[in-house]
Image (cartoon, rainbow, N blue to C red):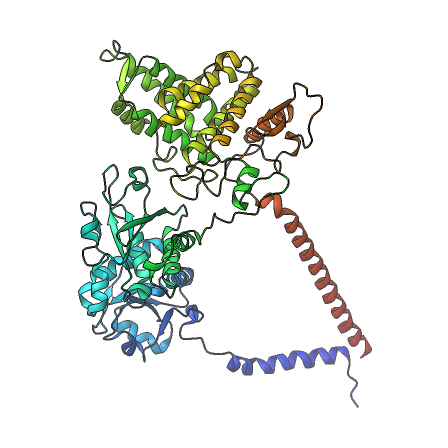
Length: 638
């Protein structure tokens, strides 16, 4: 009997593997006819046998990608094409996507018939046409660019669809600002009309309408149309000129009455607006019967800012979670830059004539900004310096040296020329200062942040720049508000508060604290005002949650200079001052940007996750080592 030695066992193993190779080759499954898109439900897989039945004389438009599964570019493009198919999956009445793998032998003749010579190649098949196809060029292979091309392709083929589809595509044509409400509701006033206001060249409105076509095409209670507007042009359908320039945005008319205007701050406004419209029309009731609160809930559903928490027992404050996080993590660079941009572009240019002390106040304001902003955004220094230089040169020119003045229009042209709108945006996008409605918070919120930041900033730098102290900054801020702030009522109240400002402020600390007191007094006065955002109530700042040591929890029997009572709150002024100096100067320690919650809450979880991964790897290595040892032991037994 032959002894089974380890050498003999090894020979048997090698022989078995060698004999199994031919059978294993037959066992390998054949390549799928659409191997790159087998998991793509919104892409039709075509073959030589079904291409005619699917795309020939079809009521919809088809875009076919001819590819080779061995082509590197095709493999790289596949994720983009899959994502594109998901992006337009609701457009199936207008256009559908398909693929055909020319690397498969059964499809080779078909690819030749379509005159495909390189991969990937694209052909479009018009509705109700033969299987011929037109070459479709895609120069930029990113989702937005391709989606725009497909939008144009649908509109170009408008006359080839059936009557229902043709009529809907006709409605993609825009309305213009020269029409009024009577023309808009000429057929019936018992209807909800949703306008997507946008500039020429925008695709958002067209694509939103294609997104919701399945849901709205045959409804009689809601109509969706595009409204083409131009900047700096009055539009009777849009009451707010300032808001009209913030496009694209939605305008809701219900029963011929303006119900709501809304602008999305998200980068993908198309998806946001599609979600809003879908939410509006999912109700079994007519859209015209929905309450204002139901419409508000639909509008704010995708990026809700209305999750207001219950009243906090310790501080007595009613704060939404979003607002609380904004306060906790502070302000953002974008809000400060936006407020400066708005003040220079809109507020200053409102004056008919900028002359005399106005010029001096404006120059001081610009010098203050030039001292503060570069530490937040480096590019602002060059732009502001150029504006200061040009303003000085302009008012010193022979035509203006006598009057020492300029018109608001001349200032507007100067700012438009010198301030890069990529740094100082024309249409602000508020982050920490964003309100629940476009007209709430925003500019005034950002302006207060700018004031507090400027005062605390120069207060820290008094030794390095003694010429610009917090006392000087306080005077500059007062002059700006008195001369350029456009809210007359707000200006009047501030003037009354600051009548004795020069006598009340003699040190930098007093300047910082005076504006803190003034801000809290204004918050107290406006807390029940209609201009107050319901999700951002006017509070006494800082709240106890943010600075517990800033408030005394019990009455003070023997008050000192540190104790200050304001609006039913007893403050520790030393702690408040320390808090303000830290809160508004954190950009000196870290890069200032949008509020970041990740680092504070998720870092410990990440460390725990990494630890578990390491433990799992150690366990697997030990398991493999034990298994290897067992195999070696078995060989030794032989």
